[in-house]
Amino acid sequence: MFTAPLAIVAVGGWGFYTILERMEQNKYDPHALPSPLIGHRPPAFNLPGFNGAPGFSNTDLAAPPQPMLVNWFASWCMPCAEEAPMIAQLAKTGLPIWGIAYQDQPDALASYFAQYGNPYTKLALDTSGLTAINWGVYGVPETYLIDKAGIVRWRWAGAITDDVLANGLNPLLAKYT
Image (cartoon, rainbow, N blue to C red; front, side, top):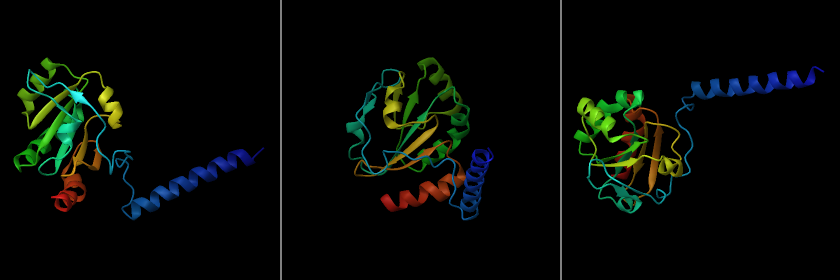
């Protein structure tokens, strides 16, 4: 009678202890969700652009001249608004950032860009959300690093911060540039 509850408590305690150990060793990151795209090319897609501009497809990501970011965002997303200054700062360094607006409307995007600016080299609309599903997007914002061979090398679920930039993205940009 006590075996099942005792086993549940033991497994929960072991899991909690494991998380504490990883946190102590700086190996625990709740944002580091696994992605099946790491080490592979993005899945096939072809998305329209914003306000009559051309969109882009997976073939446009096949061999970029330099490493680039693909940033999934939405005008209705509060973390995306918090991340906007960091994305703008990265764009000013010359790093190409291609945006994909997730389940958004053109009017709402126009307002978003009026408030935060448009740092994207290219911009596409995923109004249905099906492309996001194929990429394995958990939610917005989500950012992917694509190397010069068109391979996904990094994924970050959540807003890019100074810490993410310093400890995650910048070392990879140096490696793949």
